[in-house]
Length: 207
Image (cartoon, rainbow, N blue to C red):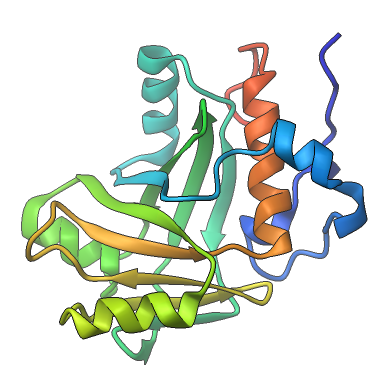
């Protein structure tokens, strides 16, 4: 029998700052992590910028059979620095899993400068970044900076950092570093399990 999940099963700070939901670490035992977590090593996410998030989620689900989508409207991190300056670009995000890979779709609602807007102006909608799991965020940032890669985005979500290194000069997009905290493990783990057990009925989880 498939386990049923309620909306409270998702760790909201992974999707939107300021939310109060959180799973206590003791609820995710080591044995459950080993059997039911996505892989928190190497590339853990692929991301695209899209003109219409709702339409894109429907298209990806119809064409690729993935879902449900976990949506954060008007995403607003606690700290949001775009190339070192405070940023308040208005974006919405949809994420889901296919196997162990997280898929992310991003729509920017305004024309303010951002990592997404600059890519859009350069080459239009489409692929934007890979995300790598980071178990030592400061060391990983320093490694990219030593290669000459600028830090294009630095945000804080519920105490964990997400950093974009601008690798677009020699790769097809940017490289995101996701700091692997207990919250990230719980939130992404819940998304993974719910997507794995999805019955295909609802496009948006909890919607």
